[in-house]
Image: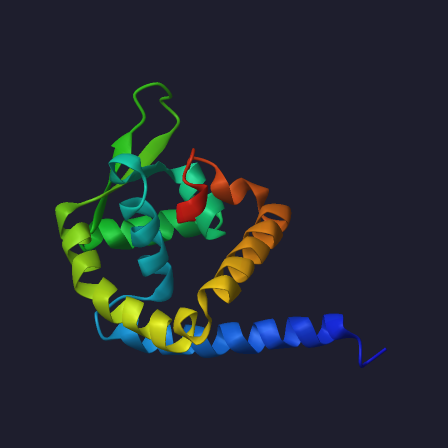
Length: 158
């Protein structure tokens, strides 16, 4: 039972994720960002109009609604994002990436992509990467089906 390949697969996934995540934390920290702040900014920047409903942002990041509120409060304070009321639903609101937030993304992304290339995607050939992406989407869609809400027809970008 201890030799079960499912245990090996999970252990390798956790070890690989932890190693890459630690390297990304260092790179983001050099720009004064935490991983959660970056995750919110990148989701906003990649969304149509640079905005997402707060509920969709929470679903995509895996944060609670109060957690996403705290992150957006911090991003607003730093001038990297702003809230906008939903014109069709008084209870809803959007988070919008600001011009300063986009500038921060342009500053951070070259180094971020270099770390990803060095420690993750660059370790795989094209066919391995495609298989990995397909597998990760399959798993993500099963465990977090709400994570794609608010992102119509952007499956290849997720």
